Amino acid sequence: MRAEIEQIPDVVANFLQQSAGSIAAAAATLREKNPVMVATVARGSSDHACSYLKYAIELTLGLPVASIGPSIASIYGRSLKLDRCAAIAISQSGKSPDIVGMAQSARASGATSIAITNTAGSPLAEASDFTIDLHAGIEKSVAATKTFATSIVAGLALLAEWSGDEALGKAVATLPESLARAVACDWSEMIGALDGHNALYVLGRGPGWAIANEAALKFKETCGIQGEAYSSAEVMHGPVSIVTPGYPVLGLAARDAAEPSVADMAHKLAGQGALAFLTSDRPGAAHRLPFAATGHPITDPLSLIVSFYGFVEALARHRGLNPDAPPMLKKVTETV
Image: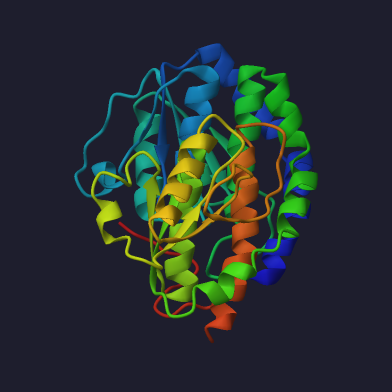
């Protein structure tokens, strides 16, 4: 897992070079067809990547994005009216029958279907109009890191080309450098601070909320910690009641319009006794964690998960666990 985290900047650079043609082709069709909505299909970490792209697409293009449950096609056998839509399916293996089935259904209903996968010849690729290959190489660790980060980069690169947003395109092009700095961020002060704790909150908002969900999953996968992700706007609607003195909180604040919301909530919880850590320079009671700013509000949350990955891998080893092979999990999960 550690080796794959360190590969992320180079993998992203290679992806941007190798997949430029497929991104341009898919973007050209999207501009031509001008969809009224985007549907996403994924599970697990890939679904968190889709959540990230939901915010990115809505903020950049003003198009609504909806996550479709794969069971609509695979279990319930229902087709959806997607003839004026785009459908983006993300799967590292491209093999899960329910993801493939929903992608097939979306294409049959008339959607422009795009697969983002690390397996170019997979069933998902065959079920889609366009395939964007991650070119990430074999990922041996059960916990996805380089494929997750590159899946988001793939979606953002497609969005930049589709929208013609030059600032976003420039930020995506410089992500290899930004993510190299993110890999180098040291969050080790949080490792010992979590000794004796087996539950915590991860806060985020907007694209950062998608990243918070991915972080919460990785706490579960690699460390056996009950991590739960909440929007900083939702945590006061009930969940705050279990934040007792010393309860850990990780606030993943990006350099975007939601930064004050996430930072202020982390500081508020710290002021009430929580053990809060925060990726922001906004002053307050929470402990500051270093971050690698990317220079663009849409790409900035991505660097946070890359820094987090290095931390959570070290945390697992600190706890005597093997982050490469978590119990009861396998690399490729095929659901119906």
